[in-house]
Length: 323
Image 1 (tube, rainbow, N blue to C red):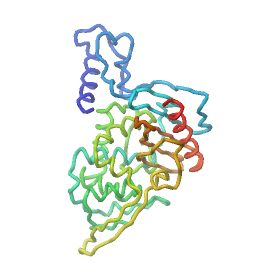
Image 2: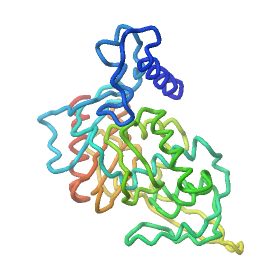
Image 3: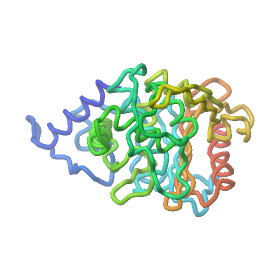
Image 4: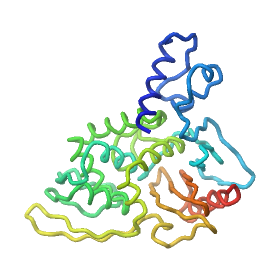
């Protein structure tokens, strides 16, 4: 995947500068389509090999009369094994991601740091936004990156996302620079991040398709796979004075913690939720059908938790029909 990411950017440069060919691709940073779609353009297909051969590619909505997401803003279903987009509603619409942001935070953390790294909380972990999910970190508290990733991805703790960002980037802005660099390198060119947790902010947005790209890249890490499949987690971290602090959290993904059933033979391996007033209810899942074939499904901006899971089951049921 990383080789293909580098190749993708190299090919874009060639397309823009000529590199011995008469073709010039209409690519800009925030184009209507992803960087990965450029190689699918008819006029360059004969010149350049596909650099998205192990990815699903979509530039427009892909409809089916089997799925109706109602008022939900965006959603997509990707057949990972066959590199096929089975369904897509507004896949390239820029929307608030809420805590799906934390997938990118985890991806950058895993890329740039060891799970054994010790992180120390600053006063910035004490977020004041009403309703923000936190574990109550205090300045001087310490935990390892491994612990922090578990708590952030399983429980969606916003203060822990700040802990990770500052511990790796030095400060929030520097870490967000890494997030945006990573987004560009994997072709998620319609997304932009200004914080590591997903609390609503101007100029902080993703698309359903970009979330698929980000999620797919994160799945390359075994620790990420392990964490998103974990229903509950207990650990001990330390206060500034060395005293122990115990914490126990449960997954926010109802499928993972056994509070909601996927249809028939579908097995939900893991996923991540996100919810804010601006983003609505969001969910991305990694699943397998009865024969073990992998799928990624994502819903953005559902109007309620109930609608979110009902509509996600529509996507999962469509897997059964197409298996």
